[in-house]
Length: 424
Image (cartoon, rainbow, N blue to C red; front, side, top):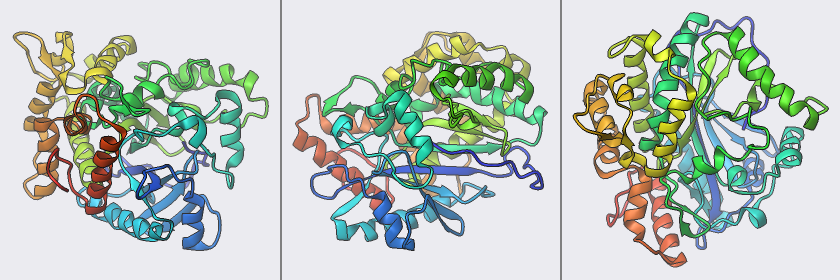
């Protein structure tokens, strides 16, 4: 969750894929019990001697989030390439874990804590930008998994003008429904297997349901200019929230909670529906794969952009809901959708089969063997959610859940990919 920022009129916008912004959110937990620890402000204070919202370290920055147990690592402005970016993030993961040792604490990956009780464990960030968080809490009550227990990976992609926005938005909208098949990492909430591949997205899409224009159908509407976006999305949201937000605190672009949001103040589209993975390496594998497919879509490799623009959000959302539930096992019964990628199924095919096709079509990672291995694990062994379930078994005890998630924390510390029954 971010606050508003002024548009820099003197900063020249980047063209498509000339830069990338990445944000990774991690929980802070007790090293032994995995109990949530609300000490992000202590971590930041230990580094700079003040309760700041952001600390910059050259290419990477740390920042707070809505809740006091989450820290965000992010690129400080756009970087030119995602290649080897995992190494920079990994260095900061290790630095933070070192600093947390005095609290007997560590960072925990995945998009949701499997045992957290958000109604008792939630503490909001009490320092800088607190007014925004208090406004959200007053309107929506930010206890609950949909606010306090959902860690994601955000990818910001630039556009230069309305024409590039239209192309990028068209490609992202079409790909959004199947992205969670790669990124789902949240099969457990409240100590129970939920039956969903992406439990984080399920609670996320409902966390502001009393004001439905804010999240929409998660897949954004088919709008392809700044003017239309302002009229059909922003103004609708602002009108709906206004009676609950008399000070106008939330009537900014950041209020938009779709799975991809236009940030016209910085000429980017921010993809927000990805669960965070077990390590920066795995996250970069997911992001590089998504970027490669988006580039192919925009270059009209499989279908004309005009055809992509005709897809209604309801139709795309129906696919997304299947993927939230079943991940790569979701069946694509809409053959028009698979044909957008020139992938014709003789019978119904799975989202996992489509992703294998796309990876073979677009991804060349010869000089990045670690990234190639990570995405190969995801498409051949299953997303992290499936691999967690394979490690947990069908009816896991709390002790077993702690054991598996402690191993995931070890993967994060080592920068490796999680495989059931294999130590990181």
